Length: 373
Image (cartoon, rainbow, N blue to C red; front, top):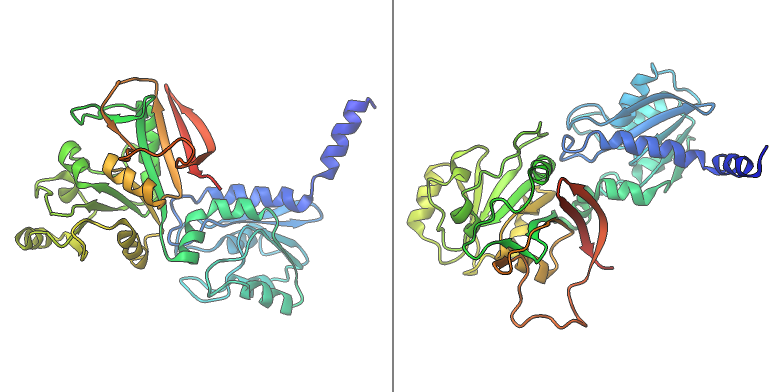
């Protein structure tokens, strides 16, 4: 055997089988993206003598969990096998019975878990129950990847706040609209199609009133098969929103968030049309207060598609978890910027970001950014 071949065979042999099977489970879990909320995405595979005998993933809230689907796929012949699951098995009754109980009943010998469930009703209890039943349990295999898969669920469970995505489409010189406020269309058709997919994966979409007044958007997922329609929020401190706006006339219902200066007459007119109005004590809508209430209402993920004012306030306050920045190969030389401070920040103390990933959509480049650690 040639030296290169020997090295390749050695590298293959050194792959941790637990990681190999967990990667498969993570890939299965991804198939549920956008469909499982408010539950997390979970995948599971069952292995006996190095071969997968069953696999499954959680498809939709209220339907069987990944562990049950994997055992069902194996024909329930799982005694003595190893289960790989991306999230700690549940121990409580919800819309479905506890998975830990069924794992014990069916005689699984070993359970490998990527990450503990952040839900306080489960956290650590699934592992404890399995171990008390004599099952060998290993935790932490590809934990980082498992947390990233369900980053919105983890943030919501650990903080009570939504995972915040800021979506921006800008020219190479940083403008999201021209000097007249026109932004149609800076990004390509392919980029816009991807944004519609993103809309179907989040719980809420928020825009500022200026976006509604200028663009009159519907903010619904279109031209894709959406898992669900997100709730829509308009941040409107003075209730300037026209009653004829598409976002008020096209389902699902919209929430309008306003401040202390709002018109009671306009508020009544909105509520008569079935529009929910959230009132804050401050004159201007406070983003932190808005996100806190959204979390209390069960919104696990929120995407902001507003203009420069909304984007600047979110970036300045550090409220975002991710920025999806679509850069179009165009130059305007002026217009509306997505981030503007007065006075500007000095070069030695900017808002620092790090690139998580990037992807090309037709002529555009999508940068997925996070705050620099």
